[in-house]
Structures are given as C-alpha cells and as structure tokens.
Image (tube, rainbow, N blue to C red; front, side, top):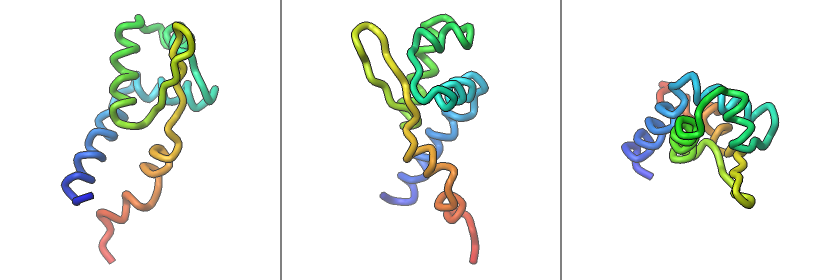
Length: 97
C-alpha cells in the first residue's frame, strides 16, 4: 500500500469517527459486544433511516461488521481495525526519530 493509499484509508476512518452520533454507536457496540439495529434505534433515539446512514459510514470505514439474521442486522466492532487505529503504528507515520 502506498503512503497516499494509507492516508486515504485513515482519512475515511477519521471522518467516520468525527461525529458524536457515530461515537455513541461505537460506544454502545463496545458495551454489549453485539448490538441489534433495533436496540440501537431505541437507545440512541434515532429514526432507522438516520441510524442506517451512520452505520453505513462506520461500515464503509471498516470500523464495524454486520451480520444479518432473519430481518434484523447485528453489529460488532471490527476489533483489528479499531486496535490498529489506537496503536503506535499510526503514530509512527508522523514520528521523527
């Protein structure tokens, strides 16, 4: 992966994190490990259409995963991606020795 591709990937992830509602969504998923979209709508007081919009941004950034069971979708954190963002690896891109 080129440095430009890496920057584009990080830009997408940080844009996804730069919203209070999406941070709340990630927090709820973190608390329960797996959350049904129906529970998220109730907990966050968001209409399903707005919630779906925010979930799509988080999924497109690779921060969450979705599993559909019947008519409901369940969301989990993409732990490797979250851990990667919180690691020193990202800091090393900008650290000078």
